[in-house]
Image (cartoon, rainbow, N blue to C red):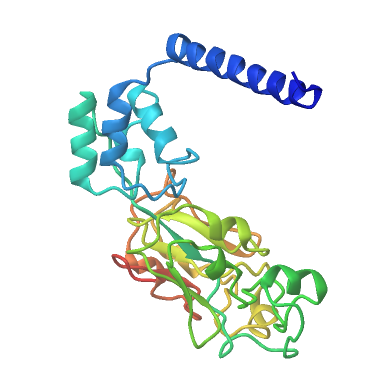
Length: 269
């Protein structure tokens, strides 16, 4: 045999040998996947948003079949899908709590004092590092849309006031906007929790209002008007505690002088 053909022939033979070994190993050693996983996966929305705490719908389906999660943990699936999964797996569907992303800032271009017009690297993260943006309030939204870009579900749009607006019908509570915001302004909250503080400034009185006309001035009226234990003032901001307080009612926001504390009805943002 030509010596130039020996090496290729040996390599081809070895390749065929190992291919046969792999095929045999796959045939006899593979682990059969629980058939209900595929059926459960077909009932899930397939958005792979991560709102359930799993890296994707397949991982969530595996956890469901293993009994580690309840179907209602998927906040994207509708009630019919949740009930269908529960029936398939013969488990309790659990209580579905719809969550959405909300922004702790209402101070856009028309409310927040502008110290400069920011021009530089595009994006909130870059502005926060380089110059802090153009707003006088160093706790407010920078308005450059990192959250809009990060949202793969097109649930966030920038309005004319330079603030992100969340579409609750599209929001899956995946948390991407929470992770990308350099000022930690987004929070995932249950849709049925109506009291929401749209400010994160730790300043009080005229110091806060001098930077933003809709800032919380730490007057404490919301805490006084709410049910006992529901709202407490902490670092000059109202903190709503649904776990330890009384029922939340709209009266808590009626005397707020700036509108920093809002009562959000339904899917209002």
